[in-house]
Image 1 (cartoon, protein in one colour):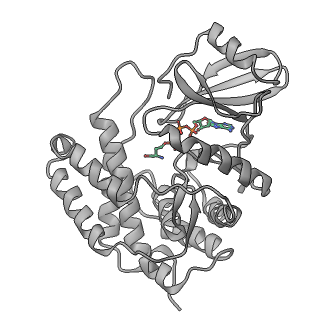
Image 2: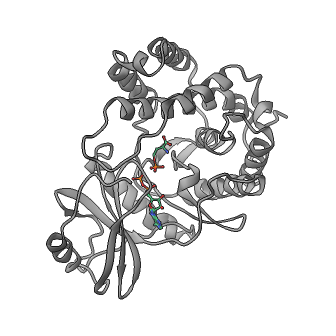
Length: 322
Ligand SMILES: Nc1ncnc2c1ncn2[C@@H]1O[C@H](COP(=O)(O)OP(=O)(O)O)[C@@H](O)[C@H]1O
Ligand SMILES: N[C@@H](CCOP(=O)(O)O)C(=O)O
């Protein structure tokens, strides 16, 4: 359960008095997530999610995240809508943390997505990229090359406690990526964390996307690589080429990739694998005492990185270069 910060009843009551969302019926910590503290809030006016922003979220970025959800929802995307208090502000403070209330979305996150769901999420990702166009605030990706370099340095001393040789592997991989990372490909607002727990389905159809707190401006094709990593490996670690083809085609059916984007996919898959390996490794080595959270396994992403290192080309991911 990701609850780093507790909220007592008096503080909650004073906080909610600023809003027009009815009387509290129930309030409880949510048993998923790793980044922020999330609570399910039920009131006489419905269900809401209360989020307290924790360590990895810079306060200066919060207007981007909140403005983005407003922008996407206005553009017709099914995503949480920030609830504005009586004074018009959606971003407030609670228990010493920045806090926001957003609308509750219905649907189910798949534990083991099927091929049709992979196709749907590919199309939904392209829809998100289109809906983000015209958003007026910019946020550079704090978890791209420079951020990875900081994480590699921070983890260097203890990485081998997780896997012998890991420090050398991540340093070598970062150097490889730094030398080859593209500079000029189509870019815009990306989700940057569209894992299965951040997508809701009704049947095989995407019903909503959540968790925009890593969203940023970066390459669209890199976002597709994040999804290939998150959706197309089986629990035993095997890469599922059928799911990858479905996901890639779901995406390219709505937003075709340029030749340069297609050619960059193996590199983006490596970069995305390193990004989640590094944040998971950092969290593994720096666990917060007393927090109710289950850290995610860094080795899962080490194995994905190894797979991509041996990949033959974009065809591996169901992507063809015309
Ligand atoms: N708007 C929402 N509607 C319904 N459930 C939500 C919503 N936002 C979050 N949740 C639930 O809370 C969990 C954790 O949220 P998430 O934003 O992924 O947390 P974190 O970013 O802290 O890891 C999600 O997996 C989901 O179950
Ligand atoms: N998706 C990341 C961790 C971030 O967690 P989320 O609950 O915000 O999706 C990972 O799996 O490493």
